Image 1 (cartoon, rainbow, N blue to C red):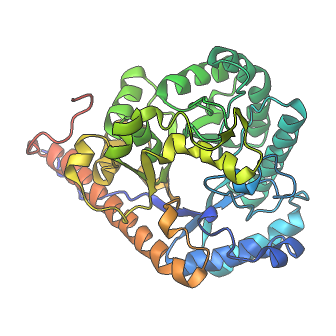
Image 2: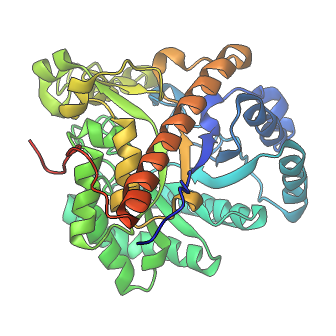
Length: 413
């Protein structure tokens, strides 16, 4: 009989810097682009995050989407109006050493399949700058979207992915990077009535896209940065989703996690269903697209009428909601990841993404204890799941002792 030591493996905790867009006021950071990174590293240390996911974005003066039309404004903490040079990297790496805070990865969330060719070229060129910055900063992954050309149906978008996105993955491969795709369907990204505006929104599409990548020799560059909030939005639960990937032979696809929940409003589902509000949102007025960006943002009612983002730890424990897939069962999420996915937990990042509207406070002193509490919750949940996995699947299993009970089961309705 083998006696296994109790040796739980904990995941690495990180924090997306878009949690506080205005940590460094724009007047100061526009003049000194890397000051924002230095101050974010110090802030991460203050709130207890050992890593950050460094957010990059087109500068507001260069973006094709007005800030007023965004539900969750992006953050250009990493300012790439000018290329990220070795000199800039030396400064940031020194700040990382001083703070003791590292990088999980870089992030640039944008529509990489946007219809307008000139706009798409500008975004792809910017993404390559993000790739170059990742190399200089010593991280091996970039997180982002695929996006969608809303003028095309889904099968045509697969062809467009092969024609225009594969070259980006080839650029990543040359640099030794992995591109991890977050699966948000982005239902309110534009004022069309399309719900899926990011074609990489679920395991079925992930597998189809990965097969294209394999044909072009960049299968290892395409991975998923899984966010359970989006699964909840689409009526999925993480355990079943992970089981599907394992059953299909693709449980290697998930390479990282966003830690963000979604709390479904049963009244909203009763009124509109999971397709969200389909008319009289305010993004169309008099039969025409609204002129004001703030009115166009009403397109997000496709999502917000039935759900609200959760910052981990801020939502009440609701076992019935877990069973209905109407909120994230965080403990089972972390346990299922270990049981069903092909990951090494000790090398896998859990990135807290703060998009709970009521707590999106752009005030450092007020936000700090909120983020500290959420990070502590996330750490505790992961440690509990790691302990359960090590005890059940390693210690007890080695001694031939059965685990008690049944637990949550995949595909069960």
